[in-house]
Image 1: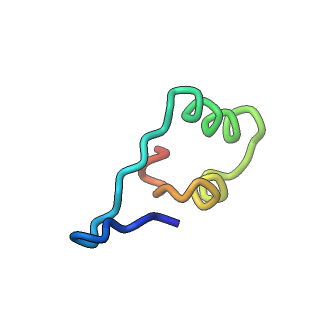
Image 2 (image 1 turned 135 degrees about the vertical axis):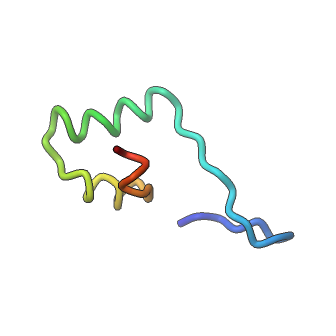
Length: 50
Protein backbone atom coordinates (compact mmCIF):
# COMPACT_ATOMS: atom_id res chain seq x y z
CA UNK A 1 0.00 0.00 0.00
CA UNK A 2 1.05 3.63 0.33
CA UNK A 3 4.25 4.49 2.10
CA UNK A 4 4.20 7.05 4.87
CA UNK A 5 6.90 9.67 5.27
CA UNK A 6 8.48 9.05 8.68
CA UNK A 7 9.02 12.74 9.45
CA UNK A 8 5.44 14.00 9.19
CA UNK A 9 3.30 10.90 8.54
CA UNK A 10 2.28 12.20 5.10
CA UNK A 11 1.94 9.96 2.09
CA UNK A 12 4.28 10.23 -0.84
CA UNK A 13 2.50 11.02 -4.10
CA UNK A 14 2.75 8.41 -6.81
CA UNK A 15 3.34 9.44 -10.39
CA UNK A 16 2.08 7.32 -13.27
CA UNK A 17 3.91 7.43 -16.58
CA UNK A 18 1.85 8.12 -19.71
CA UNK A 19 2.27 4.46 -20.70
CA UNK A 20 0.96 3.31 -17.32
CA UNK A 21 -2.06 5.62 -17.64
CA UNK A 22 -2.87 4.19 -21.08
CA UNK A 23 -2.53 0.65 -19.75
CA UNK A 24 -5.00 1.43 -16.95
CA UNK A 25 -7.50 2.98 -19.38
CA UNK A 26 -7.16 0.05 -21.79
CA UNK A 27 -8.31 -2.32 -19.05
CA UNK A 28 -11.67 -0.55 -18.99
CA UNK A 29 -12.22 0.51 -22.59
CA UNK A 30 -10.80 -2.51 -24.44
CA UNK A 31 -11.01 -5.34 -21.93
CA UNK A 32 -14.29 -4.26 -20.33
CA UNK A 33 -13.15 -4.45 -16.70
CA UNK A 34 -15.22 -2.59 -14.11
CA UNK A 35 -13.84 0.77 -13.02
CA UNK A 36 -14.15 -0.19 -9.35
CA UNK A 37 -12.07 -3.33 -9.90
CA UNK A 38 -9.34 -1.44 -11.76
CA UNK A 39 -9.19 1.28 -9.10
CA UNK A 40 -8.96 -1.27 -6.31
CA UNK A 41 -6.12 -3.13 -8.08
CA UNK A 42 -4.22 0.09 -8.81
CA UNK A 43 -4.98 1.57 -5.37
CA UNK A 44 -6.48 4.76 -6.79
CA UNK A 45 -9.73 6.54 -6.01
CA UNK A 46 -12.60 6.13 -8.47
CA UNK A 47 -12.72 9.92 -8.83
CA UNK A 48 -9.13 9.86 -10.12
CA UNK A 49 -10.18 7.46 -12.85
CA UNK A 50 -13.16 9.50 -13.95
